[in-house]
Length: 194
Image: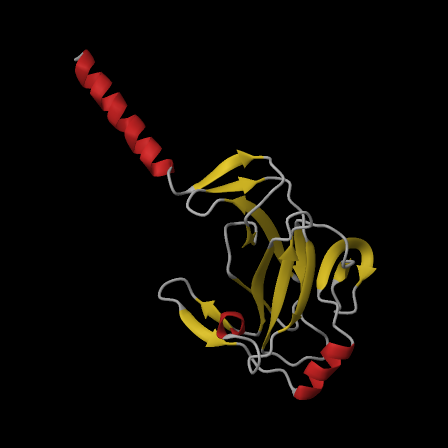
């Protein structure tokens, strides 16, 4: 009986260890990272969606990770953030497409902003990346948010629709780790329906 219990315990331990390999680990508090993944607070997300006339921007959290096969989360990482309009005529498909649904995933191409909108965005880039600020009303119309300064570090930002740009269109949001220079990007789709 003792041998059977020991064999059962060994089998459980091996199953547990094999389940842990190749996954995501927790507890690393180092300062270097290899990549950035994005979350909406409930898991990893590759594409975010925000309504063009909505009352709230979408929250995007950047998470620093180390490793490629066994990815360890590196806690306490902050990033500088920027965003720009996606131009499907110029940007590669990896930037100008997004997925809808979970399974089976459907790929769609981002909407094409007009030439006038794109030209205006080049001369005066829209302020898209926001941070909570009590009592503020951002030009996007989001109460309680203000523009995030380009040099301010943050782990979570808020991204909303660009005033005057008719939907549908996409935004490319970029997070850069200040000490490693590691860059991660994610797409925000501004549309009434994905």
